[in-house]
Length: 200
Image 1 (spheres, one colour):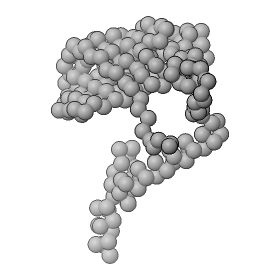
Image 2 (cartoon, helix red, strand yellow; image 1 turned 90 degrees about the vertical axis):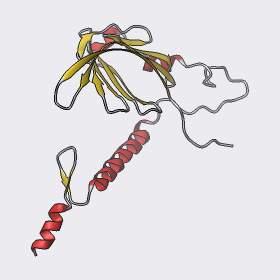
Image 3 (spheres, one colour; image 1 turned 30 degrees about the vertical axis):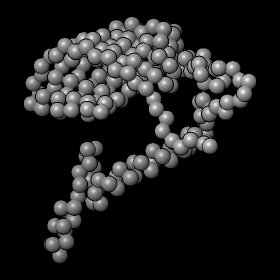
Image 4 (cartoon, rainbow, N blue to C red; image 1 turned 60 degrees about the vertical axis):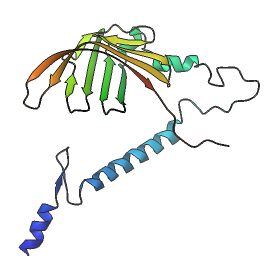
C-alpha cells in the first residue's frame, strides 16, 4: 500500500526541537502544557506558595493588608549581596509586549566574579530584531537595581512593578548574518496585573 505510506510521510510535522510527530504540532504543545501543569501542581503541593494570599481584617497594619510591600518581598526581589553569590547566581528574566506588537526579552544573571551575563532582544512590529552585542560585562547592581552595560532593571514594588531602562548599543540582526549597530535609549515599565474573578 504505497499510498498509505506516502500519506503517513506527508503528515509528519517537524518540531523546532527536531523531533517528528505524526499527529501534528498541536499534540506536542498539548503534551508540553500537561507536563508543565502537572509539574506546577506538584511543586505547589510539595513546597506551597512563597507568599500566601492575604485576608484583610479591620485593624490590620498596612504591611499585612499589602498596601506597603513587606521586607521579605524586598529581600526576594532585590539583588542579593555579593557574598551570597559565591554559593549561587542571582538572575532575573522579563518578557514584555506592548499594544503595537513590539516585544522585549531581558535576562540578567549575576555571577560570583562581579560579572553579569546579559541577554537582551528587542523585536519590533515590522519584524526587525535587535540584540545586545556583548553578553558578559561588569556587574554594577546595588540596592534595588540590577545594572550592567547601560541596562538597568529597577524594582519599584516587589512582585508588582519594575522599571526596565536601557541606554546603549544594540545590534540589528538580519537573516543573512549581516549586522548593523544602532544606538538605543528606551525606558519600559513592567506592571504585573492579576487577572481573575473577584470574590463577593
